[in-house]
Amino acid sequence: MDIRNLTALELGKKIKTGEIGVVEATKAALEQIQAVDETVNAFVTVDEAGALRRAEEVQKQIDEGSLTGALAGVPAAIKDNLCTKDLLTTCSSKILYNFKPTYTAEAVRNLERAGAVLLGKTNMDEFAMGSTTETSAFGVTRNPWNTAHVPGGSSGGSCAAVAANECFYALGSDTGGSIRQPSSFCGVTGIKPTYGTVSRYGLIAYGSSLDQIGPVAKDVSDCAAVLEAISSYDRKDSTSLKREDCDFTSALVDDVQGMRIGIPRDYLGEGLDEEVKAAVLAAAKALAAKGAVVEEFDLSLVEYAIPAYYVIAAAEASSNLARFDGVKYGYRTEEYEGLHNMYKKSRSEGFGEEVKRRIMLGSFVLSSGYYDAYYLKALRTKALIKQAFDEAFEKYDVILGPAAPTTAPKLGESLSDPLKMYLGDIYTISVNLAGLPGMTVPCGKDSKGLPIGLQMIGDCFQEKKMIRAGYSFECTRKYEAPELAERRGK
Amino acid sequence: MANVISDETIEYVGILAKLELSGEEREQAKKDMGRMLDYIDKLNELDTTGVEPMSHVFPVNNVFREDVVENGDDRENMLKNAPEQKDGTYVVPITVE
Image (cartoon, rainbow over all chains, first blue to last red; front, side, top):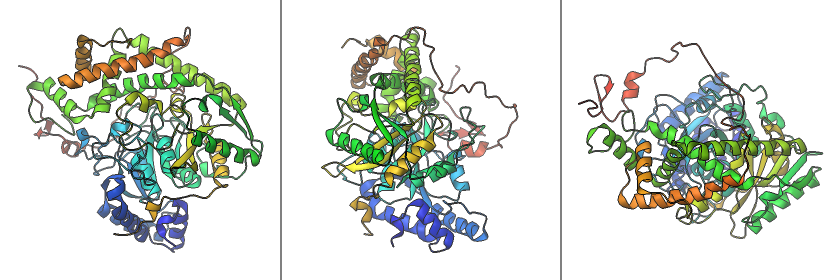
């Protein structure tokens, strides 16, 4: 048995019985990082000393019987936009190149309470703005399935790290698809929960009304367990919801008999790669064979989600990123004349191109004279999109479709045309606008050997239906890791 | 391109966004923003008369708590992140002449 191939829950079980030690598991993950991360670059920061120290501490607590959870002792990786006390948190941006938070994000604290060992912080698109993890100030992350391709984004580091066996699970964040799309590209499972389920306290904000934190792992069971651990009502997040139904692992049932599953015809049209389409429809067939009632329907408004999203997300970003001014933390320009010049130069030198593009757009759509025409129009469109989903969920338990129109593009192909890159988010973005839970489960590979992801969307608060459908589908196929994950030592 | 962004507009947005663009960046930004706005104009195809703008999906409003300090004094640690600090304060360039 190779520790690295275990799922998080499998490892947790073996730690519990004493078959594997926490330090041993942590060393296995750190060795894997050493063996492959020079190639993959999934991590911005690896906290080897901290992880080993923490592993000993957790082992002690397990031995004493004070830590008994299913994830106790399991090493994890955290996206670098989640604050971790005294550990570098950069958002993959030059402007936060030296930032060490004085507190830890609530979701990460919840994981620590569950006995997680943090290995380090994962690479991402700068401030989570991008779909390829190429806008990181600390180099691109490579797709473990084919290192000439991107891992997707913005949680590309988290997804690549899981696929490459560098950690047993990871946290990502999803504003427009940033967990689901890279999960699809890397052949792993990822969940974006209902808005408000996981506290955003300590998540460096991009689009606050859309951002949610969620798990990335090798399978649905792991994701359900991690989501269960990180979900909590938090007074420190004014959008946090009081939910009493966060026992997500209770939905790990291989049964879709009578479940109503709808496939939006709008998700199968122009722009969708034929191989992706075939894999998604084959997955639908597999669920139908298990007794689900699967049919196609018209969701409508799909083409308006991307423009509405970019107005709202850019507007919120322009406001959220105003705090980076070279005064309290992060980068400050070397030469300046006066305060405003210092602000301007620090920000212009500290932010990358894509971040500046979105801040500019956001400032514009919020400016006097354009606010109604752009910002309010987008918020009205959002209301209509939510309504379209409400109607769909009167008929269906789960909506099924692709997570992305294609498999992972090659490195360097996407950034030259931002608009085209934005269009790649077409199947994931409306889920954030409507606050819904969404999940990606691997469902096949294309002829180039790149993974294809199946997206499942649930109604608000209906993660369990989505998890049950995902788990049932997963039971029909075996998890496959890329060859690179099998690479050992140097 | 239906939306042509003028020099004045990009200058104004630069002030709002507190960003200083070089000549080349400026031209690119004008082009990018025009192109994005052309695309966003697609929303005008939708009739949204009478539709209330939805800023949040769930009706969670006015989350209040008592105005009591709950976190401890972490000044020293927070100042460690500052590019420049002095006597327990952040140092900034002169703001008033």
